[in-house]
Amino acid sequence: MSLSNQPPTILVSIDIVSRLADIIARTGCFSVALLSDRQAEIADSFAGKLDTTDRFSLGEWSHWPSGQPQLQGAVSSLDCEVIGAMETGTHVLYAGAIIEAETDTARTPLIWHQRDYGSVGPIG
Image 1 (cartoon, helix red, strand yellow):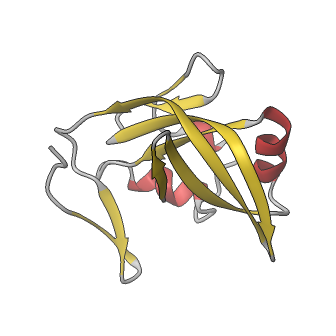
Image 2 (cartoon, rainbow, N blue to C red; image 1 turned 180 degrees about the vertical axis):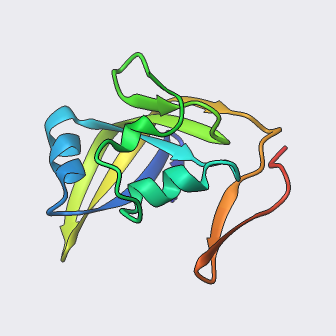
């Protein structure tokens, strides 16, 4: 979710007992990928719907200069530095300043609506 445009900042909500919450707290950074309509299997893997021990085995991955993973073929990818965190019940909210971003306006975003994947037109 967008939090601010000056500086560009987003907000993510992560289950507080997840391994990812520990990684973000330890490294002070995270990356986000807005998936394309051809990446539903990757979404299922990260949602725990597939029996995938290594979620990064699906799709093509590289790394941002920060060392965070970057998914190739996404509609948009963001590399973020944590600038704030707040525990709220079962989750922790991380505010991340966007350090780098890449967007492919020719790709069609994947959306989740009424318990199914769909898409809308390209974002460009």
